[in-house]
Length: 273
Image (cartoon, rainbow, N blue to C red):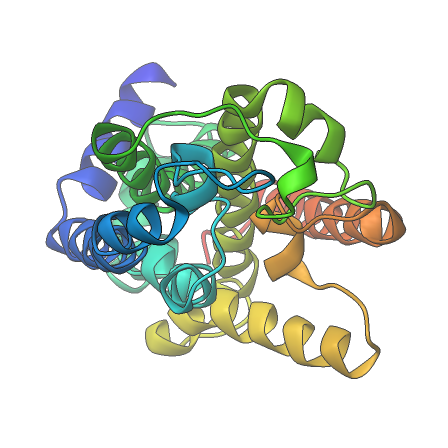
């Protein structure tokens, strides 16, 4: 199993599309950092007189990094990420079937181990691609602005009492930053596994690669029409509210069940295809 995982991780991470996804994610993080951290420092500090006005907090890390700062670039990040995570590895299992590579594998390895390795690799690949831009944004922003502890009374942050992590944010902002990154890793990792499910139902590799984004976007449209949060708000973390927590749990449970059912259906099937 370890050897198989090593092979699959190499196929995922030593892949030009993996680097394309990382580069695009880096570009989005760089744009956010430039326009929402770097270019705002002088203007804000001049207006505020370096903190002379009460009730207003100077520009800080937890106010500006991409995981907590709402901007067109952070929205773009959360919108396109299902596409970026799918690029390197989402069609791997389908191509293994089309190229008969899977039949060669099954003569040497238990098919359950193969499908388990594919699923785990797909999840981790999606998680790494999603988490990298957030980590980069946090680290670079920390090099530019101080890590002031957030003050709730300033009303300069997205967190309030209705937010699941509202109280924790003002007490331990670094922990919330790690939670936001973890949410992105797990959330987009699971969403990337949607392609794993559809690779067994669709024979077109381009359509398989698009399924994570299509399901994600469709859920976003339906949720918006019902005036409730969707996966974009769930994964953002900073926008997750108590009123929407039950819907997030239901959606995650349904997705996990579909992924597990897909895994066992493949594992127990007698034919390779």
